[in-house]
Amino acid sequence: MQQRTPLIAGNWKMHKTVDQARETARQLAALAADADGVEAMIAPPFTALAPVAEVLGQGPVRLGAQNLFHEDEGAFTGEVSAPMLVSAGCRYVIIGHSERRQYFGETDRTVNLKIAAALRAGLRPIFCIGESETEREAQKTFSVLDKQVRKGLEGLSLAQLTPLVMAYEPVWAIGTGKAASPQQAQEVHAFVRSLLAEMYDTALAQSVRILYGGSVKPANVRELMALADVDGALVGGASLDAGTFSQLINYRK
Ligand code: PEP
Image 1 (cartoon, helix red, strand yellow):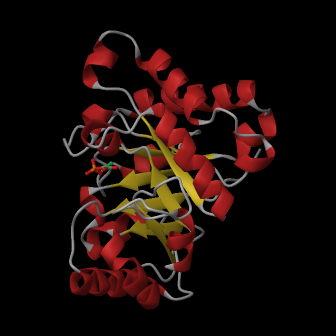
Image 2: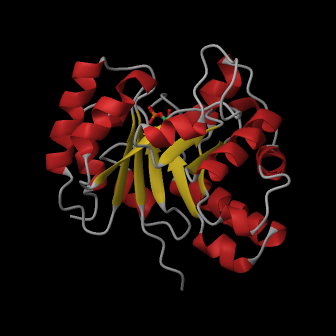
């Protein structure tokens, strides 16, 4: 069976000044120094990327960004490109988070362009998908996810997708304290993996890490990480405090 290194990724959203970000990163680097085969990543706001990269250095915690624009450079005021993120020290970038889709007009098409841009620059995209509460209640979960995955990966070849990471984040579970049940999470993760097998091949489907996101906390991380198709977590609120986030990174201990 394929071994997938678990990834615990923190999304700091629009939190922390440069000084606060540096301090949290410093604490986290110490607390995550010996994470027992688990990879850790934090995604601070753009302003803190380069300073946090300096703090993290070659240590155990990787750096990611929360978004990018799909062009590499040009007259796009206010945007940040994939090569810029690489130059700031990023290895990962979160793409298509439901807050981006909800508040900033991101669509399956823009998500697709962003994933392609990340891959071109050598960044690992963390491609977020998830259904709303209304869609789940209307039994549309699988059709919504099917469309998000197919459109998000449109035109991308098998060879390009080796660095891909997926994140299933039910919108109703983000920041609500109401995580998906282990059964709900496993069912969706297995579905996404089989969809990747159908669209590409079994080897890719078995190697892609599928993270769960939505109210992951120290109290529920172990039961989620024990699921066959859950390969990590994308964490919002519980990633802001180094002590709490390190408990997630160290879930195996
Ligand atoms: C997120 O924003 O990706 C997220 C999962 O948030 P939280 O952990 O706070 O639910």
